[in-house]
Structures are given as C-alpha cells and as structure tokens.
Length: 235
Image (cartoon, rainbow, N blue to C red):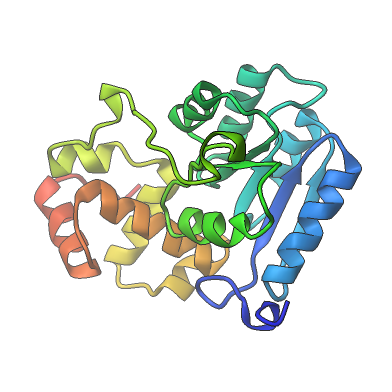
C-alpha cells in the first residue's frame, strides 16, 4: 500500500465514515480498507440499523455512510429508506452481497449515492469513494454480471434536472440552502465548515451538488443564478 500514505480527503481535511453492518468482521475489514486509503480517517461503527440511525444523528461531521443492505433488524427496502432519512445530506454508499441489478438500480433511485458489491476487489473503493465524495454516483454491476464495470441506472422522470433557478433553489435541502447562504455572504469553505460544525470536505460536496442542480460551474455563476431566482435564503 505504497500510495496509502498520501491519500487524504479531497479537501485535505480528515474524513469520518460510519460503517453499518451486522457482521463485526465485515466492519473490521472495511475499517482497515479505509484506514489504508486515507490518513487521519475516523471510523464509527454500527451493528444494527437502530444504532446506525442514532449515530447518524449524533456523530458530527460524517463524510459518508457505508451501509449493508441486509441488516438483521431491518427490511431491505424500508431499512435503506430509514437510513437515508437519518443520513440527511451525508452520502450513503450501499455495500452488499446482492447481485440483482434491479435491486442495485432501486437503491440508487431511492437515494443511495453508490453501490459497492461485497464480492468486488477492494480497489473498487479507490473508484467509488472519490466519485461519491465529489458529488457523483457510483453504480457498478456485480462482478458476475459485467466484471464490475459501471452500469447505467435509469432514473424516474421526477429525477430530471429542474428547469428554472427558482425551482432549483427550492429543491435544495435545508443544509444546502444554509451553505449557499453563507457562501453568498462571502464566507470561505473553511469558514462555512466552522460555522456549521462539519468538515471542509463536506462543504465542498454540498457546493458541488448545488452547482450541479443550478447548472453552474463556479461560485460567480452560482451567485448570479441564486440572485436571478429571486429567492431569499436568509432565515
């Protein structure tokens, strides 16, 4: 692992992952994999959905959640929905042994930001994590289907991009709107992170998502689009 020593969070800030799996050995393996890939990474573990939702609310500064789709105390679909709700703006990556492509697609449509098959080589994390942490979606096929190559996930019509700046701003979560408000006040990513009590890398993820929704590429365009929407972000 000669590259592990210089792998850090995308912003240079330490990362914090919540690993949710009802098998302690799996949690241990994922924890080791993350520690090999990132310096100063913090790991939080949960062996049940109930514990996971509690920690999603109580642990500050989570970067991402790695979630086993088949938890002992939860139904496959309702459990994921509950985890996504508890996660809020924190991206959820499903880590599962499920090989049904329809299940993988349903996880992405439900709101998961990635799907990593337990049968994949550990290097898949090197592909999946940067994509998800930068605001993208990672959805590979199971190895038995396409050798682990990415698959296209058809999204419902409701998931198509909004057409106006006003609609786009209205579609943002409360946390994304707060990040946008502080940005428009001239605060830097570091200042916003300090004000909200999260990692700077988390702020970068939020801003990337906001820019994608408004169809802009930089802060100046983002400010102009927000002003054009006519929507007041102040509380």
